[in-house]
Image 1 (spheres, rainbow, N blue to C red):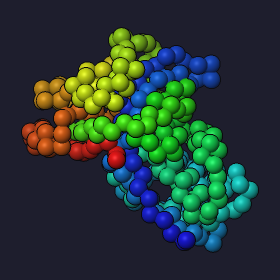
Image 2: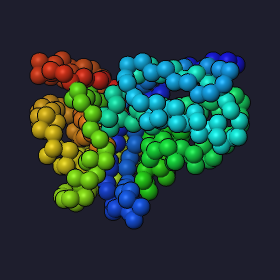
Image 3: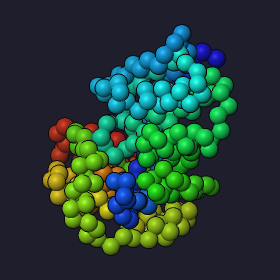
Image 4: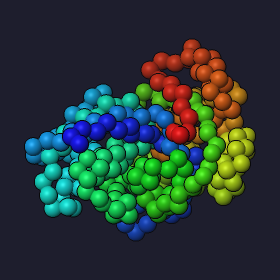
Length: 288
């Protein structure tokens, strides 16, 4: 095999609670991940020598590109100079709270492992993934839903959940730096009582869409809304529709609403189009 084409999916955080700031500067969190069907496309091709990345749709310095770092990491860990061309066709906005970079890194780790038939165990990939980013392991898991803790790199996989959620995701047209939002959060702390993530997971298993939306929670949301009034505008607009729940994903910048079905999401998208300027709308569902 000389070439692989792989989908690199985005995620939403249906729940994100900041528990505490750790001595190492990171934050202890509890989060519920959902993998969605908004995807980048990654093409891996064997190459004579070295890791080469070709990025279409965005401009990221090579040393900051997580896919590039993932390629270098796997080469270093196995002690062999692998040759791989990595072509990334971007559809997931950068700095949007959708995990695009982490997903690209996970897809490269999984893909190179398969392309070169390295036989690296998933547990080992988890160890390497954690060194690249907090969300990488969720994408390595290839599960639809998972509970993340620690920095988000430790996982409790939620298997056999058949519920498919439908969302309207709004990217406001600008990225938000995760570090900026966490610093701002440290200045004010938790301002809203968290919902119960265990009840949320139970509702997810039962497919109770209304209850799922009512249990959405994000500790970072008040900080994001305070610093970015445009997102407050879109939160108000989504809340004025038939959304069962509305939430900022991760540290932003995307905001999403939960709906009963695709038909309803499409109707709401058309309804809100007239307010759109540079925003991008995505109709997405759980990646099945």
